[in-house]
Structures are given as C-alpha cells and as structure tokens.
Image (tube, rainbow over all chains, first blue to last red; front, side):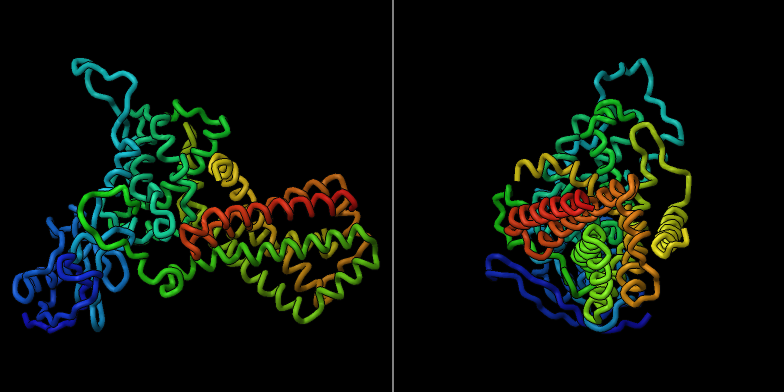
Length: 246
Length: 138
Length: 115
C-alpha cells in the first residue's frame, strides 16, 4: 500500500520548556488504513520522540485515546485519517487541564464518577450461600445502554456547561448513577441523590445534547441526565419516594 | 474541571473548541437558548393584547393597528420563526425524557422517532386549533 | 443563590411545563395574532375575544399560559447568560432572570385582574 504524506498540527505543551501550549506541525507519511492514533504513534516513533499521548487498546474499548480532532472530541483509534481533508489538527480534550502535550488531568473526572457511587448499593447484602441476585432480561434492558460507558471523557470535553460550571458532575457520572438507579438489584437511590440532584448535579445541564453526539458507545448521556431530572424533581416534591425507586 | 487538584503542574483547561458559534452543533444550541428572548418578547406582546382587551374596544383597535406596523410585523415574524424552531427542538430532544422510567412506571413502548414526530404533529394540530379559535370558527 | 439552588427542581418543573405549553400553543398564537391579525387576514373581533379571554376558563388559562411562558423563558435566559458569560455571570444572571420573571408575573396578574 502506498503512503500519503499528511500534515498534522498538534497542540504541544511541555511545562519545563513552554509557558503555554502551542501548535507544532508535522508531515507524516500515512498508510491508507491509518487512524489518527497511528499517525501520532508514527510521530513519536520516527519524527519526534518527545510527543506524549495516551493510548492502549486501539479498538475503541479502553477509552484512553480521546482527543480533539479538528475540534471534535473523538477516540483517535476510531478516527480514520482518510476521513479528514487538509491539515489535521489534534488537541488534548477540552474542559480538562493539560498535563503534557495531549495528556490531560483526569483526577477531577474520576472523583466525579466516584461521587455517584457507581456500584450496587444494598441495605443488606445476601450471604453467598443464598445465591445470586436474579434479574430478568427486561430488567437488564432498562439500564443496559447506560452501562456501556468506557469513561473516555469525550462527553466532558464536548459539554458547554462544564466550561462555565467546572464543578458540574457531568454527563458520564450522571449516566452511570442513573444506570444504577434503574438497576432492579440496587437500593442506593437516596445515597446518590445529593451528588446527582444537589447543587452541581443534573440541574446544571441545559440539554445541549453534545455529550450524546460525541459518545462513541451510544450511551446517550443526555438522555440519562434529563430522565434523571424528571425523577429527581418528582422525588423533590415527594410524589416519588427516594428509597423505593425499584 | 475544578481545581481540587493534584500536585501535577498543569496548563489550564481550554473551553470546547468552537463554542459558541464556530460549529453548527453549538450554533443550534445557542439558537435554541435564544428562543427564550424572542418568546419572552412574544409573551409581552400577547400580554399587551390581553390588556387592550381589558381596556375596551378602542384600545383593542389600537392594538391591532400597532400589530400592522411593519416593524411590529417583522418582530412577529422573528418571534414566530423562533417559536417554531423551539417547538421542533423541544419535542425532538424532549422525547428522550418521555421514554424514561419514572419510579416503577416504565416509559411508553413507542419508538423514539415516533414519539418525537408524534409530538411535533400534535403541536401542529394544536396550532391549527388556536388559529380556528382566534378566527371564530371554533 | 442558596435559595435558587434549593429551588432548582421546582424551577426546572416550571420550565418543563412552560416549554410544553409553548410548543403546543405559541406558534399558533403568534401566527394568528401577530402575523395574520396584524395583516388583517384573521377577523379578531373584540366582543368575541373579550368574552373568550375573560371567561371562567379563559382567565385561568391565560394566567397559566403567560406565567408559564415568562418563567420558562427566564429560566432558559439564565442558562444562556451562563453559557455566554461564564462562571462569573452565574449569580448576576440568575438574579436578573428570575427578577424579570417576577416582574412579568406581577404584570400578568395585574392585567388579568382588570380584564
């Protein structure tokens, strides 16, 4: 297969040498079946070993290689070079502080995910001898879509609300909390209420729907966030009890 | 992201690329938020009409005259355009809330697209109804 | 702002209810009154419309519709101000928006009382 040389503009930030991020250009000979991640790896291997970027699985599962390509948050392992015309601009995810080059600081994201207690909360745990918690296919279907999140954080990079309200819990965390609230085995609705429906919870969302547009796993976080608004509002009025969601 | 952060030195977060106007996807969102301004103006216009109704036939005739002024007509056209855009987007993205389960109650077993298009069709029908009511047919 | 944060679910419910009212009715009303009425294509007779608006159904309906409209728009305006103005605009934007809604509500009540 013949290579084609493509121009990449990559936002570089090396704190020991630069006071602020700036773009640097690279001419990269690309194979026709390359994704943007392949080109980044080629730059690091053959052109400029100082480039830093995160990646792992190369198959859209691990969620590590999210970046902005021509301004849009994507998994670079799923973004084919041939689908872009002209110069390809690669930047670290927006709405996240930049540690180095294309690597962003994810601590705050992880704290937000943890804040909604994304695990099954039970008042009383069964003994192992009592067997598993059974669930019908219909009960699984209720939340399955929201459980497909790979924590790639593209939705946080796309969200216009997070730019003006950095403490907003955000799409992925709320979708995950909603997923557990909808799970027939879970009893943790009240424990999640403050994180999901408190000051920095669902009410900050103004339904730009961008999170759902960029989600590579079709989780549709905007759907989760806005369904959670209705549930939360009815719980606030007392029409719907907080504890017996399921 | 907030700064309850790590000891790692970082460059500040950058806002989403192209917000608010450089990409169509963000423009649509800002346009949707802008409907609030125009629909508020429309509400004030309707409120002035109700006030004129309360003040008697002469005030009402003056109100209708004012509505016929070219500048007011242009404003009405803008309000109408924004309200139609609002209706379309509201019903289209709102369908995702309608399929959600509320407590023990499951959402309607209707395909999502059907729910959105059905909502828009319903709004179209009520719009015709409003026109018939205003025109004295109903 | 603390009070506003406590009332977020209520504000959202009013926003939602107002939004559905608007989607269902506002295009028809603006087309009928503002455009067709303004151009003289639709006979907007005083007697009939006054009777309709001031009836036992008309008044509460207008109250609900107009107040819902104003609160819906002002809540959305608050988010618009925040999106365009950033974090610093959050509190002033919210105060301004809801103050506007309160003024519009008072005006609506006053107009409907004398109708």
